Image (cartoon, rainbow, N blue to C red; front, side, top):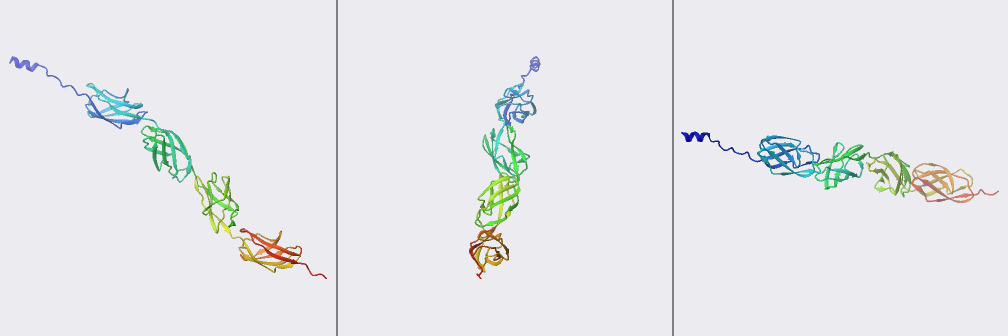
Length: 350
């Protein structure tokens, strides 16, 4: 009886609590500024008295279960060891990496059409693992991370000047600016026609013409062009035929069209009559082709009054001149015709 009383009074040895074990930190990367919420997975977390990220304590933490802790990261740099401490000891470390905060230096080109679809190169630092590229409030249509210092992105549609930013695990960059440009608009081309041989200087009037990169007459580029202002371009028509659409291209896109007509060079086939008096007023009928746009009928260097009857007929009044032959030509939008000879005859002597 005495022995059994002694046995009942003997204290039993206590079982020591296990040292915490840390198996993972999810996610295992975050911004250097901290304040990211992470989950620590493992065992024996009950009663945890500290969660550390390297030398820095977690901003806050909560022991959800003996196998899970939710913590908020402090600021930091590089790769640090994460540990959990309980009264029973400190866990093994698991690595958490502070990602470099990304930065943007430039976007090239810096402008494009409001319709979007322009491919641009973003240059900066810490761009690896980018999760987003934004043009103002709109996400890039697509992007490819070429390296830690370069991203190729496709601009979405937009208007005006917008800040471009890149987001990575390390945070969001400061902005660089991209400018959306409206497509140019054409109102008129003057003159609206010229010879099929080209070389006619025309004035294009419209809006948004600054920085024009091309002027086209149908499928052919203008021989040359000069941007006079945002509303005017002087261009030299190339050779061509028929009626063609004229367009202007800028960084903002390609304009609507205005029509320019190529006119065939006039041809004179006959004069009737082919001779007349030396004084003015004799009627002469000129026949040929492409005479509709006749602007001048010349007898030598002297212009004559005329009336266009059709594309093949013009009636002129021969000006006065000395006896003898004189070359007659017609000038139209298509150029200057070949010449036909008109002969002035002196009146008979008495």
